[in-house]
Amino acid sequence: MQSCVERVHVSAEQVLVEEGSADADVVTLVDGVVIAFMSLAGGLRQVTGFHFAGDLLHWPRDSVTSHVTLQALTPANVCRIDRDRLRELCHSYPELAGRLFDLASARIDAAREHIVVLASGTAEQRVASFLMGLTRRTRDRRVIASSIDLPMSRVDIANYVGLRVETVSRMFTRLTSAGLLSLPTPQQVVVMDHCALAERANILARPGKPP
Image 1 (tube, one colour):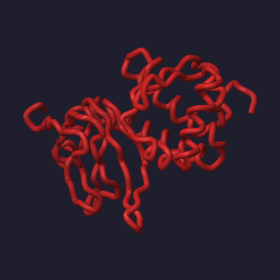
Image 2 (cartoon, rainbow, N blue to C red):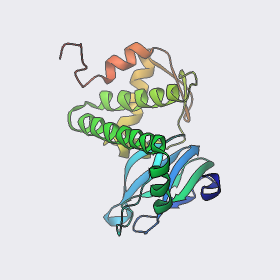
Image 3 (tube, rainbow, N blue to C red):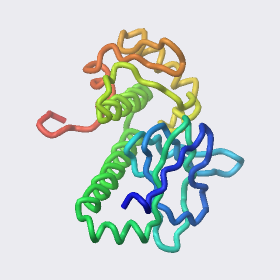
Image 4 (spheres, rainbow, N blue to C red):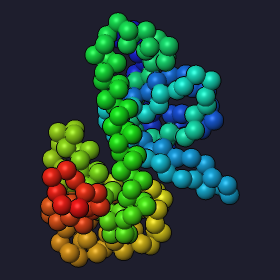
């Protein structure tokens, strides 16, 4: 299996997959942070997600071009494998197919929750939910989640959560003044109170909790 997988190092700002391209490789992220976005009229772009180590970045469908651009925000390593070859491997290694299914399911769940946040959340809830998502991802990588790196710009965060950049900055200031966050630098957030931040982010009624 190893011989058919290509591990590629990319530098910050390098494009991994171009929107509209017919890239036939399945791409997974080994380490680093990648942004996904779609091009809009007038040279604007819509950020659709931020991806971290272990994420499935790109799964091309037959005769369908990519609908997003994937670009590294930090130096990163990715694994590329031809889609058809991976399908063959999934037949031989059922556990591989199961793992890919889990990754795809996680992406769908995250997208659904993000839609709810955009549709129903206040500005504070949207920013708090974004930060809670980053802390969950950090815990998934078994790293202490109190300190979060923010390689993405405030503009990209604002684009992702559907707010003006000034509003995002104001929400960071509000959460900091409330003692929930500390901002050593613009590219780093320290979560001081995880429970309180989770309460500010809460929109969905969780199983076992009152709506």
